[in-house]
Amino acid sequence: MREIRIGTRESRLAMWQAGWVAERIKEISPGCAVRLVGIKTKGDNILDAALSKIGDKGLFTRELEHAMIREEIDMAVHSMKDLPTLIPDGLTIGAVCLREYPGDVLVSKNGCKLSDLRPGAVIGTSSLRRIAQLKRVRPDFQFVNVRGNLNTRLKKLAEQDIDALVLAYAGLIRLGFRDRISEKLPFDILLPAVGQGAVGVEARVGDRFVMDLLKEIDHGPSRLAISAERALMRRLEGGCQVPIGALAIKDDQELLLEAMVASLDGSAMIRLSLTGSVNDPESLGTRLAEAMLAKGAGEILRKVRQEFDIE
Image 1: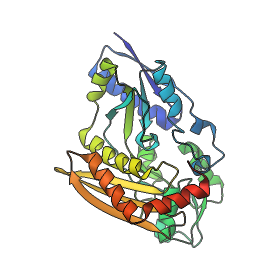
Image 2: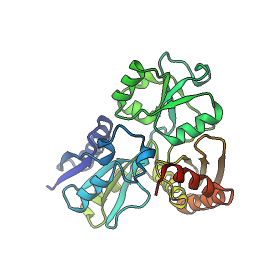
Image 3: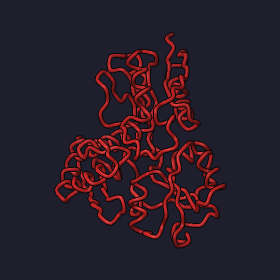
């Protein structure tokens, strides 16, 4: 029986996600040998700068993709929010796994909620998307760059002059930090990143054995939602370094997609929603992006990229 080499970043969360995929593969094909291959990415090696300052797509995925193209690994497990919308020729998303709750949460020092944080509270996050949306509801907040794995961020919260962190619910739950969540932040305040909460598995198009395995762990409703969100992102030419949020939800035979684009200080924001058929999620994403561009989203994003010199 063939050995399946699963490429992953080496963070605890990434290894958890790759391990989860490995267990599903063993269930599907009990005789299959599975091995995790840890690979350091550019994003893992640069921890002293905000992602927006680096301005590079594929920060957490490129090295994994190169290893797959060189056939050093057979598949790569990613957080879908880290995967650029343009994938190298010869590779494809073989599976989008069941999506965890996609929203963000507040983790505060004393467990207090967003509305109870002191005036001028210091929030730890490196996400322009989170900063822009939170500034809209609490312009008094101060923001500091906090990167690194979850343990590192939680340690910084405890040891530094930071009142709270804003983190993805999915990562905290997967690593057993449910008790650290002070509040789930509602979507009307904070739309998540495109793909947040979903694990994706990339593979070589021509590897039928691997592709057949991945079909078994692909979750249809999650793939539909992620496809719509990624199509919107692709049309807006966005990336994880710009303030774009989106969330698609399947309801029977329809998909509801909501998205926002904001200026860095949150003063300008375009937030729209659109409903479409589950039969063409990418068309829904593209149409909503076009509507947002017609309202001025392109100019907002141009100014953001100009400020950070993002290509």
